[in-house]
Length: 300
Image (cartoon, rainbow, N blue to C red; front, side, top):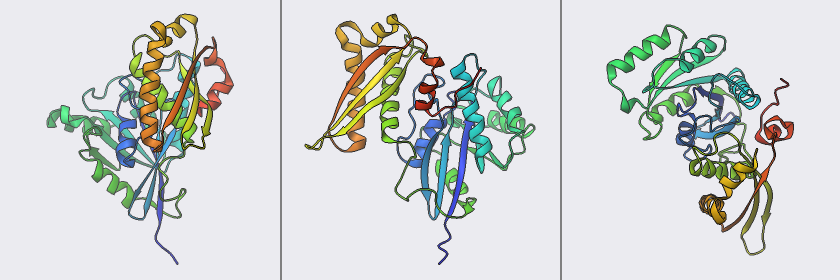
């Protein structure tokens, strides 16, 4: 019997801090991607799964697109464009408060080479006058032939329901790719590491710009119902290790406490989290670290 199921893969692309991760979380109704005020927080493609009626929406949160300078930068930008090329629908998020300059304009020009359905999504519209918003739409439409435009605030949720309904209405006929109650394709080990990296980034926004990554090295469900997690924070220099540890270990304790609290809420069981900080000088050039982050390792 045909139950009229529909399913589409939807890539969200945009400049760093355009609000892609916040929108994915709003559309799924759960925390799938970490969100910080730091640019390029999202490093790999993370898929959130949202249901709307009989439609399943596979939402691909991609890294922000910017001018790459290092190997990790190139891997992130490559992952973002690959996400758009592989998707049925591409949403271009533009921070309406920043307008269409620099990175946003370059992304628009790059989007002309991407096939498939494309929507323009102006985010943070609550911060911008209507005449400015309309001018932004005209500018973008002069470069890319968008199927439609949505004006939203991913943070407050304004306009998100209309966007979700439109995506569901245009989803392609076919079977769902994931169970109805699944909200992400990322393993919990990865999500746990991302949550700790979020707390690390928020705590050390200025002091530790790019030089850290987090990996879950142990996940053990104990007989008493608790979960024991061990994670390693990798940095590139001894001076960075001292920053993460903090005076008498207070900084890493604070990071652990915040991460443990959120993980316990997500898992619904008590969590014992143990963080270790290690120096790995060239982790940015280590193919295994890229594999752990779900990125392709650029050969040059």
